[in-house]
Image 1 (cartoon, rainbow, N blue to C red):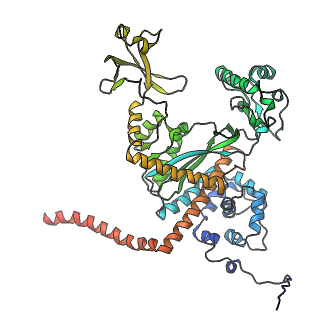
Image 2 (cartoon, one colour; image 1 turned 180 degrees about the vertical axis):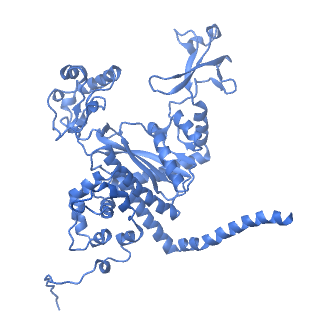
Image 3 (tube, rainbow, N blue to C red; image 1 turned 135 degrees about the horizontal axis):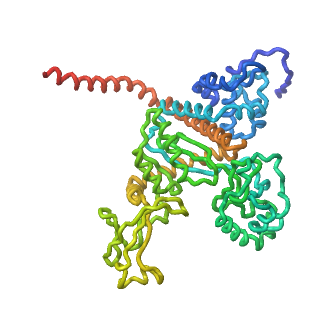
Length: 523
């Protein structure tokens, strides 16, 4: 017999979320392991003593985590999504008839809490992973990736020097007619300060930009999509974003120029747990940011009782200063050097004992001085032969050229550090570390950008971008944590390890005491 369902809302109903959400539901399991009560004393100072009660800080962080776990970057869409999900309501502690916070409350609270609060939550989740044995600590893979900022290339403004704007336009900008007119889309408000609106590049840098612009000017207006400023040659030296002054123009090979932030990520190679993440300006270089990353990451691992031994990264982090810095704090670097590094002129042999080079004719080229290269700012050593050494040399013209009188060249001051690092990189362990890096940190970045809400920063400013990146990393680590304990509980490995741990610890302690007692008994 055919059935027909008639629906009529009940005036009174007995309903409990805890009975409707399954025991194996993701958010129910997450609610059971995630304790954020430490946020109450941590955030108490950021609230006033009177007025209406604001959103619970624990609820705020849980709602933010749901956004990244569900890959939702809009606060408005997040609240609509949460209102339709029973398991999420159970996770944040709301009943089906309770009204959720307004979406603007989430935005205001995100701005209210400082970066340190988000860092504390990240550290708390990392400690949970360490306690479960998911983090080894000894090998960390570091990489970076651009993340799109919440600003459009169409609203870019020209930086203005102390001289008149019109003369600056005539001297620097030669891309197309539209650059001499008003911007395509005026920003709602200019958040930049005077320093960001002024040109800080020197004349040499502006001349280089001028030359590149002239090459683009020939057919710029006829190109497809020429109305978009992203299709033009734009530079951080001549442009700024009034919408988000902290965003910087950057480009990846084969992709259009965009306003981005740079995410620096550190991942433990044991179970791919994120151990550090931070937002930087997109126009910075990886090798300039490595000292800050290493200092922060080493302190965090030390606080968790972990010892860091191997630092694995790609060529972008390569520099002699970084190799020396890592060696000074006891870390082994597995960072391939730039292709420009040669260690000296071709066919010249270095004598480390005497600190000089031997030319192909067997003559010594001695060390003369240490200096800083004005172009790169790096420390270098100069080697120069006397004029009489090169006089009468059979390969003089090929070696010196037509005008030079003696052989002179410079080599990086950190040549020894370069060579030791190259030896490690080319060793079997170095090849293994390269594979580890490619299979560890790069997939993690792909997961964050594609599935964990990090494809775009939905806030304004470097500090706010750093909060978003921390929330994405927290959500990723929590997902890893739940998956790890689920596998352990099914296999029984976790229970076995916990049951044998006290016994092993007792045996080790007893063995140490026995060694100390035996000599005393013999005496």
